[in-house]
Image (cartoon, rainbow, N blue to C red; front, side):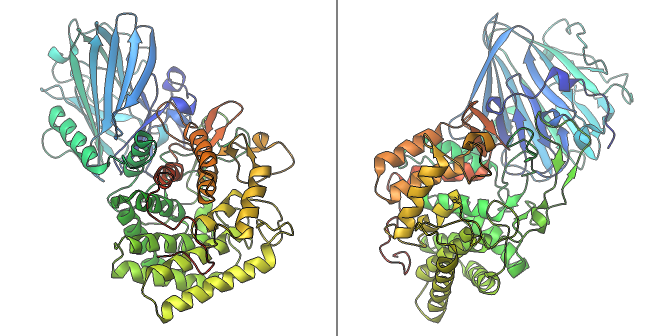
Length: 629
């Protein structure tokens, strides 16, 4: 792929991940930096090509930035993904309220930005420079009509931009042309005489606001030309606010209710109309510099969405549970024992991994697609069964869901002796976690349905998996080991007991937790497993999912003070916007990996519910026959 000159890669270089906020509407997401730059947006859907890609060294940016010296900040409006960028300048305070319009339309991006001079006057520079296909295709056929509305093509997309009537079309990245001589919203030239220019690919606007004045921008991107007049900003904002109010519950019965609401908002923003939940909004953000662990997570991982559905069930808020059951049930009905570990948000296949001709995020690469499409992950069937059991306990599993559970159970019976890639997507092996989580799922589903031959068959299969795994993967010290041929420990081995696969007081449960805390944790940060003989923090970042799992394991053992210590330590391992990545570098106190990572937000939400004593999977089962109903 050839690229054009990308000067905004220098004007808006990548920042540390803690400085980003995300806007999402279920169908796509945008990353916003502290300089007011939209540096990542794929359109029109999650896995489509990016039109703003400076995050990974590509081209394209949409920035609203103060002209004066400033100190940046910002916050989410409570229980939403409506972000307020805030800058304290030499002259006062200016804010930019921004959101993807909700409810999200799968066919069209609608990005809202409202700039307001909160205190004193404001001088800002607005740059709209979309470049399709990660920077390969510039703006073409730009035109400004008599209303001051811009339209153009960018690759295979149609663009419409309102609010930029006084913007000038330029190809000079350092363009500092004179202001319009007044307020941008009060005038500007008529239809652009340079429309159709092949070189002028940027729209630049000098925006001046008096104290208390505000200005709206609405950007639309879709495969087809907009139908009808541009969205009216006040109405679009009102619909978006209402959508978030209806989507995100109060969660006042949880601990850390504000953060629980924010995690729920993230999960809702990552879940589309199809029911599929994206694992993360970005691609290629490195888990560790120079280690090559850079992946594209803009797809629906079966396991991750099961975590989110179970978290919603634990919190007693069911829309996200219903979405997960609907999406995963459909995949099982379509693919049966050939269930893929991940899909596009529409349920299609994940494309093969390839690299773009870009610089990548510093320390990372520029990969899109994912090799997960060639893997078998046995634990996905067990997680699906746990999800369906949670829905059944809430009386939310219909006939299609029960048939999907039967398909998953039959797949376990057929395939449990095969080697698989496991939860961490490594080389095929008889991973202990995969077999034990399938055993837990079978028990949970047997207990959640009516007694009878089917329930007895599933319980017997669960016993078979547990016995076989005990015979081959129980360490001489009494704890579970990663695989029959790998005596190491693994954070994933905490999950089977958390899901009711073994009793909390089972010696194997207690020995595994004790050994894991001793060898794979550091000051209440948790790691997945040992890569080699290096210190834990030298090999990879702390795995925030495992930190929350340890909090749940301590809670299950009745050690509430320790549970809260784990919860609070890992709750703080987020960025300024409250977003979690996959890993946290405890030495440099930096986020690592793609952002935001849905399964971490799911586990945070589940912790907040269970530590408050919310209903769900019994936390201290006393019989290895499975959880009580």
